[in-house]
Structure formats: C-alpha cells, structure tokens
Amino acid sequence: MGQLGASGGALAIWAALAAPARAETIVTLTFDDGTEGQDAAGAVLAARGLRATFFVNSGRANGESGYLGWPAVAALSAEGHEVSGHTITHADLSVLDAASERHEICDDRAAFVSRGYAARVLAYPYGRYGTDTAAIAQECGYIGARTSSGLRSVGGCFACDVAETIPPFDVYAIRTPGSIRDVDGLDVIEGYVTQAESGGGGWVTITFHRICDGCGTLSTPLPTLTAFADWLAERVAAGTVVVKPFGDVLGGPEPAREPPPDRPAGSGCASGAGAGWICALAMGLLVVRVLGRSRKERT
Image 1 (tube, rainbow, N blue to C red):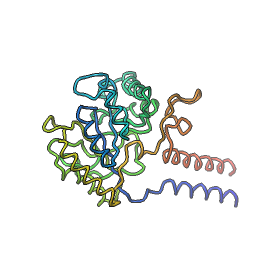
Image 2: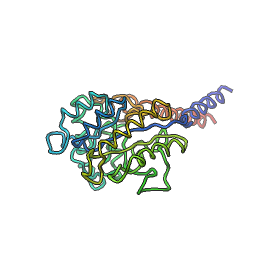
Image 3: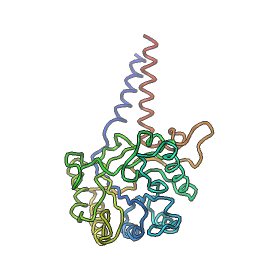
Image 4: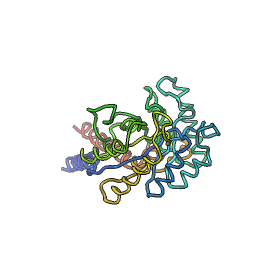
C-alpha cells in the first residue's frame, strides 16, 4: 500500500508538472545585432512600461561603426531591458566546428558576464545552429536559445503553430515567427500577437533588427514601432497579453558567474542555469525514474 501510494504520489507530481500552463499569451520583444537606432527603440518601450531583450554581438560593441557601444548597451539595461548574447561576430554557427562555436558562444557570454549582465539566453545569428550548438550553449551557461522561424508568419510558414508552447518543447530551439521586415506594416506585427491570442495563447517572440526607415530588408521605422508599442501597452492594460523579456519567460535566475568546483556551468539546478519549471520538470522525471527503478528491484 505504501509502495502504491508513493508511486501514485510521483505520478501526481509528474502530471502536475507536465500539465500545460493556463491559456495566456506572453509576448517577448527582441532586437538583434545591437545596431544604432535600437537605443531609441529601448526608450520608446521603457516609456510605456515594456521591457525587451536586446541580443548584442559583443565584438561589435567594442566600437564598430553602426553598432551600439558598451555605454549605450548599459543604458538599455538601466531602462530595465534584458541584454544577452548573439555571438562575438554574428557568426553562422551551423558551419563552424565545435571549437569555433565554443569561442563564439562562450567568449561572447563571458564578455557580458564580466560587465555584470546575466546573459541568460542566446539568439542564434540567422536563426541557424549545428548539431553541437545546443550542448555548447548549455555548457557555457545559457538556459535557452532562440531561432528565428518555426511559427506562422507572413511570407514564411503558413501551416506552423501560431505560438510557442509554455514550456517550449525544446528550450534550445525556441520558435518564433520570421523576423520583422521592411514590408511588414503595423497590421502584420499586431497580427502575430492576435493570432496567438485567438489560437489559445502561448508564447510569441517578435524579432526586430534595424530601427530606421528604408535602411534594409530587416528594418522597421521608429514610428511603426512606436505605434505598435502603444497598441501593445493597451493590451497589457486590458489583460489580454503579458510582455516579458526572453529570460524571464524561461524562469531562470541570473546564472552563476563561476561554476561550482565539481559542476560545469549550465549543468542543472545547483549552478543556477536551470531553475523554475526547467528544474521542476527535470526533478519530476527523476522522481518517476527513481521510484520506477525501486519498484522493479523489489519485484
């Protein structure tokens, strides 16, 4: 009876952990590459109480023309935005060997951590990654990573899901609609939010690049972004959506600056790299496995 009770308790724990979250729509606003003009976007969002995630290439922040320098990055953080890694040089990780990937990912994150940033999450440049990329990102201390496709989008996939699940199926390949393009008007950007709402909720990440008028394919005029921010703030006030930075959705605290002596960074709850529901799911699986093994040994 005690054995059945324990097993039943474990199953109840697992069922509770595996149950889908309540139907709500979480919106995350991300800005890639740290280009000039994104500081203006940060100010617009902060003025409306919206916090975003800025994925910056640390190598470009060292003074490369056309990109935000470290003082501007610090100003974004001071406004309440999340700042995190995007590789040192905006490298295509899918074509690099493991050593080069580790340099681009780990040394990039180290540059942020050394300046006091949590750097919890990674955005893959071009949305591409190789077979070893996720494992390397985890080893380096990231608790999750974002692609730039996989959800329904204009000019992209029409048969895909309208929102990422909470929690995601793969935290190191989190899906998004395609990046916002210069031809995408306000209706398209708002549509990514409303289609998630009408589709039953979930997590939708909207990815912006350059904030300027007619300056490239992946660009958005500041007035368009401002209008979207006004519209989104109204929906937040109405309670139809919640806006959170990327790392906040994953639920992890600031990763440990240095791993414990006997545990590499990113290896689990004790290092701080897998807190919240990530660790809860892992612990639930562990309970079920241990009890299952114990039951087999006794039979």
